[in-house]
Length: 520
Figure 1: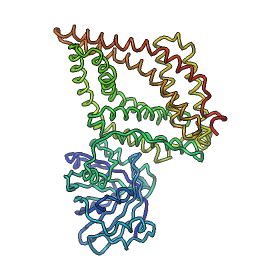
Figure 2: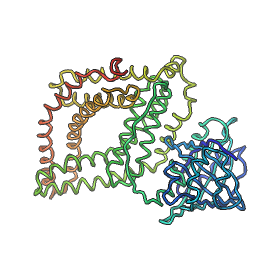
Figure 3: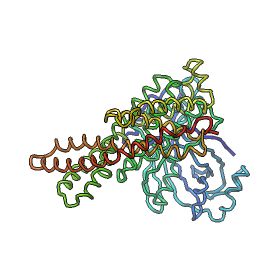
Figure 4: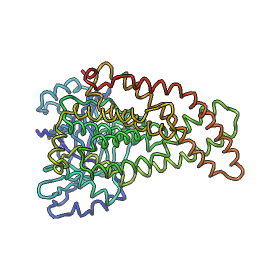
């Protein structure tokens, strides 16, 4: 019986691009073994209640020529685009599962109560072309190219993907090869296995968005381990919302991706002193690019839902607001086309691969000075305390004379509070105590209040654009509608001022949660 840990990257592509990728010099280089082709028929088994799915297990029976191969896989983690999963595989005598052939006693115990109920739930048929490619002198990568179809009782879907599996050497080899192939034709990082896709169709799962789950750092971590955990966490959050952002039916998809991007950029800033400058600068530039591609969609979502709608509710009989809404919705449609186009680019995939490389391979540490390497090795809690102190002091400094701050200074304060909050959320699990949740909730409310003022200012810019695009006959109507929206929220901003001052005073009055007295 074979049992081991797979390390692989899965990439999907359009079928019309496949020939171009297969002719890649990186797949034809010296040392590459001759490709082999075979037909594979896979049948996935589960109980009627999908018990294995609930337990994070996949049971697959594969027919390859005259051989039958039984494979059990554990739940997988595609957080960085890299699949790391346990796999148990063995040849069996027929097409049906034979749980007695599993040598791992613990795994047999997890499956024992399902044996009687196991039945086929969906299948896939692919033509697989495989070859092994040498990367440098020490790395060997298995390349499998699959074309075929997943079939379920509720429908089917095509398969066209490339799996890169590390056989020997450093993980960098996987990312280097993936980046080289991505330059030939835009690839998509595929974080879902064939079994995931089959279950989604079988269960008719709707496209949905998701908030980032709680991030758990431990006091045993050093700064390097904390960096990797935080980046993986936020990259997983981004990828979990990619489908919803493409779909565009719920504004939360784009919103959650933008949150993930902001947090990833924040991580680069938090760890800038221990990251190679060229890596931090390159990733930050690409994060900024992607955020810019999503910005119009998010701004228009906020405008329609949080700014225009309250004005319409206040003035339900005002026809000019309906005209403004139609213009905004047309602009939103164009903005979401821009989002989809950006997520289809090779540049987007390259960004995901570079982020994945950062956390899955530590070769970048080799270029650092000894003193910097030492900082990466210090306890995460000590490292975090220094950063939180610095962000806290900057936020308080920007808020001096709060009542008399200009609009520009309020904007600078908002950015300082936002950066401080992201740092606090990153490291909160290192200092979890009784005061931590209340402190962060208070900080979140302060940021939201400052953010609302910024949303109103952003709306002014959008309204100027809509007014400039107006035809001769509706320019006046758009101007009246814009005045109503800005006037309505301008009055609201003034009424918010006492609340803001109270929130700021409360923020200054409470001791930080990571200080020694509160962190224990």
